[in-house]
Image (cartoon, rainbow, N blue to C red):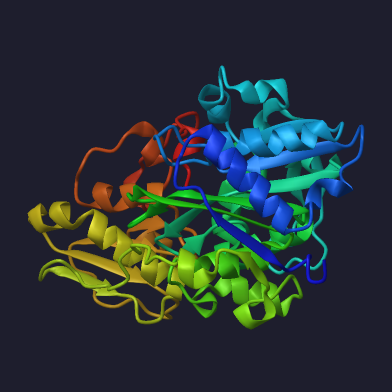
Length: 405
């Protein structure tokens, strides 16, 4: 079929049963002209879901994975379902998926040190599990989600999970938006099968909730997939900086006019996803926020953090100054001080410092710490306090990898 490489197939799966999801997967693959025809006997196929959190609904549908693995196995391929952390093994324990695929954690695989050609953020060599670099056919199975910093995530951001264990931190240190594109340059996905039977919306990953939507989509192009699913969710592609960057780098179309949507139309499938809060308003006087020079991602992170911690900030009896964005001189610092983002590294001794562009959700612990709340040993590893305090951090007290979002 003409246009197969950038076409997106879309269908309904209103019933969440494995049988209904299997039928939906069959439909979207047929609409793409059988993209698994490129899989041959003895090929190594890796399916990468979004499955590192235990909370029900916050992961790719096991039924969708079963449907894809079964069809790849029928081609005579050696199939693996792989994700960082061991959580997917717990979730898939006892699943019929094991008849068709091996379930593995990237954390258990040997690593290959690779340089990403054309990388703009991840310019240093990174460690990638061998199975990712050596497989013959790579399938992404993401779940559609809102995101408090980058607005919406799906096929492209799912590749952050290629980095094993705790090394996902490098993405936030180097800059999330461009790093997503770099990872897609490193390992293009031959096929995407998106789970929107249940989506995650609201202030995710700081909070968020699941919502049944009943859609499955497929494509051979991650950018076309994310552009289309953004439109389905009521989000414009131009709002997603990583999609604009991916298009500039030649990875795919970001205009629906350049994408052939097959099956259910965008209008028929459309819904309005509940986004993370973006209005950066301190909850009361005495909470001073200086973020006029911050990048969009860090401003959105702060807005989401203000929303998450609103009640704690209202109860906090003192003043607090929160600063984000590049500046030669800091503003007047009153009360507890929190510095947010890589741009403030040179001022890191002025208060509690949260590195990253943007920081991760777990780093909101730094704001709680600044208010005088107790934080766990693992959370304490996620922010820096001035060296003058003499406080040390237990190097072994690290969060569970599924908490690092």
